[in-house]
Length: 539
Image (tube, rainbow, N blue to C red):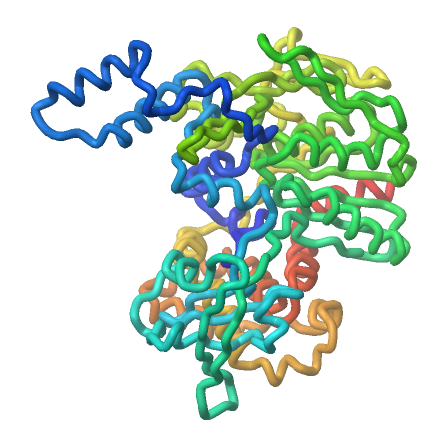
């Protein structure tokens, strides 16, 4: 429900340390390559007192100087034990399982709004298309000031509290009161909660005649259907070439990745294979369903592209089907199965490795512990890899051949065919601070909402992108807003970052007024990786 942090915008401005921390969080939450399994027949109940671990826990419970919370101790033991195996095997407590599964299952139950908290007030950014709120007539810019008769404005409301109030079981009701611009009285709504989709395809648009662009943020259960819907729409609009953007995509379900890769490969081509000590080799090959097997194709990746993203890019690269552009991907080549335990918790256990068609296992080393594993992205920045492709060195044993005989590399992520360095030209401490505090997003929402009537002359997102030009008066207004929120003006740093700031503000205003189409159309114009893709496709 919150505005997501999109890969092609705020993540670029982060300084290396913050950038590394956010990347870690994203990969931990998203870099799954999962086959969900409900059968827990081979897992003993956590309350069954057998074996060495249970004996130790029994001894502690009976003899420790203070009363212990046995369940909490069991769960911390399971967590530590699984983390000893590899970075992606994990224990998920029952109370967290629904929240962890939600982004991959593709839906939740609620009233169906995207919101921001601005000036300690819940502000509707967009009612979700087809959701309960849209059907009842909630609009962008509405302020939710009461829920079940209780005031929720000016009380230091948090995102977590909003979720608790507005989400709930399907078909249950929630009463809200909103303040709408131009209305003197509060408007009361009784909303019946429904199933709300969590989309994993952020946008599918023609960025120029014949040039399609599809941004996939994760590989969830509904991703392939979303992808096909967007793909078919673009085909009807005359798409001849396609860019698939997997930057920042931390992964998801293996089958979703296989289905998407299948769209671009001829029947019989190998997509990926998996094998492990107790898991026999399983091959996934392309079927007849592909409908874009001869057209030009580019895939965009970066250090946040993991797991299922690497399956798609690896399959298309090894079969010489697409040009891979960007920076080296994360390097996650382990397959997890999710097994639910009778008490409602679950474990995700690594059961196999996956291999690209040329035989590459792209899993990066993890023998130095979790901290070293996740800080490896920061080390890439430090050693210059983000700026220079020749800073990466591969042993001969990690070299493999594509179908046509080109050399590709294993041992730690997918290396792009065309390297594009990270752009640091506009970065500054000032920029870091205003993004980190969320001020750019808050300002853009407030500005769009305040000037909604004057923006009405732009009938479509394309009109807005083409004709609206943010001015330095707008920048000065933002600077004053930032000062009021504790970030002082810095002339030298603003000179360096002003162009980027104005682009971001325009993109966010566009999203608040229209949708993600406007947001991405603005950002892509200044995106060096996207520009490299256009150049390659037009050659």
